[in-house]
Image (cartoon, rainbow, N blue to C red):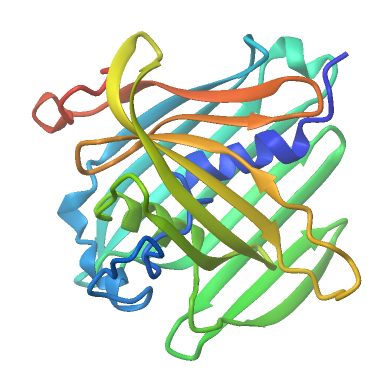
Length: 287
């Protein structure tokens, strides 16, 4: 029987959608060296032309058995003279996995290209018969986020405080593409996903050659841990772990991700990229 993979595939889908959003980037390095920017200031380092537009194709397997597919599409638009990224993603379980557990998700992040920060993130997902639709609108100037959830014809709304080191998932993915990384780096910060704040830490542990799809790459092995910041003081956090392989060349993209379940593991791999021929990053599988 296939285990309940909602947390695993859901987290992996978020990673794909946000280009490895579970990683905590742009914080202080604890390996004895500081980067010359803060979590807030480095947001502006991302420019529109640094992220290749196109479609990134991913496949999920559970213990080697194909179980789901995912797509991320990145496009650049101008609205009223203001440049934006549109990062959309979809994820769905395979026909075989649907027999045990059915999952569908799509998301759209609208990102201000001048700051690298999300203006809004809209997520729709269905797990078996359960349907969840949410939208988070970010107001970094006011240090607030406005969260809405639609369920069974009702709308729940929240206003959330953005602490100093809090960042949105889409911004994490964009920052990651230009972040200086070396083996031994260990960073930590907070990321707001929906209405949950996650404490994230990651360590860059190795240079490795990895296979993704039918291609082999030079990659950085990154091992993040993360947990929801609970309000209940007497409840210990449930810390989750993943392993992520990022392309060594910039802009970095997630090549492969792996997360353990109580039976085996779920793996997500980049299997193709669809770009104009002149825009294909070197060494990237071309769909």
